[in-house]
Length: 413
Image (tube, rainbow, N blue to C red):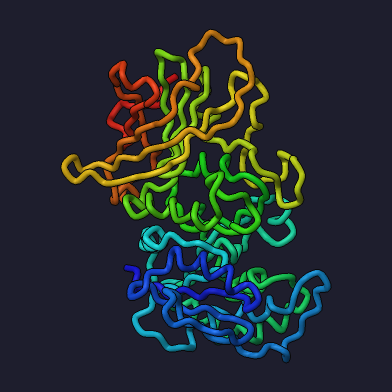
């Protein structure tokens, strides 16, 4: 349960006025527990829906010799230990994040509920950048994407951490210091792919449109990447995403793939975020692979630079996706279903000579879905989807459904 999770957020007093807007998106006063740890005192507005704010202990007695990094890494690495020393009751998990990390707290609970909190667990994920993982470690949980430490392990870490980090003055950041101490404790990283560091630049459409089959736990580097919804601010776009999350957090960003065989279209749905229609048959094997709408952390279009498979953005003029972003969503109590309206993103389409019908006539997609809060208690499987019949008076609208696959139902070309 959420009350057993305590968040430790590493923040910066200089960036606080901007970054606190990200925390407001996911913080639930009276439900979430945690502390923001800053480097200096700031003016506090008690009317804002934010965690308690505390000032980190002085770290000037700790050695730091990495010429490329910043000494603040020492302070941030001690956030879990300092949060534990507050003596909060009934804690099972400490979850670490940055002030620009956005958590989907219901999914944090879903992921952590799989594990025995009485055992030693260090849970998180790697970077999207292969080079970053080589430079730091594939065995390290990246702090911006967030990671979780079980209470018994946090107690062991607190006992030895100050001595431990003195042994690694040359490390760059806070998360590699945590991992160095975990290595001394003999506790490996348990990987959960829903924690997202997002060491990339540019447009996240390719990544978020093909999310792995796992709960969406966190997003990071939101000041670095483009706004996830074009045409509106980063914070307003995330607010829109949280409207979907309120209706069905378990299924947020989950991909489903289907085909309109009459019109020869391939359709990929990322529930609560985007629908993409592509002319022609594109296999599920390709569609579940993120398209490279983004650049790697070193700003190069190098497909070998990622820690996962990707596919190129198509250059064929007829296979450029028609993209429909979620605009509104509401729950219909009488039908027990969520009705989502996805508007077409207006951008120029290259000339196509194929005789296949073009999706350009479709302005809106109406997507129907029943909530499924228990989907992660079953074996992981992508949802199915399909096109619904519609009358001739609604040629500009496409009606679709998304839901659990029935026996024998597959994404068949």
